[in-house]
Image (cartoon, rainbow, N blue to C red; front, side, top):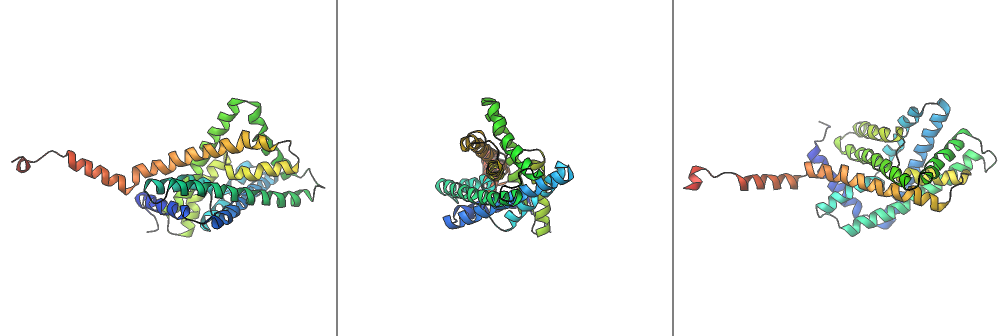
Length: 282
């Protein structure tokens, strides 16, 4: 059977979280950088499909391709690690310090990879600034402004909205990373991962790593966005929202209901509270 039961999936989550927490900085930067660039590729693929066909859902159906590459190649995606490493900490297989260092260096890697791809892509799509009205370039600028200036126009309400959209996003993204453990075959893993990622992208929720590409790319193409607007009105609240949902709604929730340690504790409690038989009373 290629299907892996949920109890084993949680054990695999713990092992994956432990492995990620122990990686050296060099690997975190390289794997995080590659993941940031690949999600940029996925985003431009989706936008190209949308602008060419006029169907946003088509772009959403194609975007998961690059997420799949990230997972199958064992790269580092901080949004997935928001669910995986905390369960390793709960099992005492990793420390809080290791977890925080992983997140920090992977985020740095994401920024390097995503901005580098943004630079290369804007050179290609604008032909070194000579063509600024290409449909995909216009789409990127519009999305970048919607992800920053629109929220700013709403004031404090905008921060709440972007935070909630980030929660909704990473609830699905972390499920995408976790359901990869439910199959032992490559095609099974791909099919399982594809669905949650399609769900998040099709609804325009906020993903921190995607935004590390989209917003800088929009700025390079001419969107009137400052670095402070990028980080205050999107990047920081999105990272926080992604962390909250990844940890609470995927990592902790699955751990609490499927971990072997919790099942053993429940069994021990049941044995302790079991009424005594007549023989035991005698």
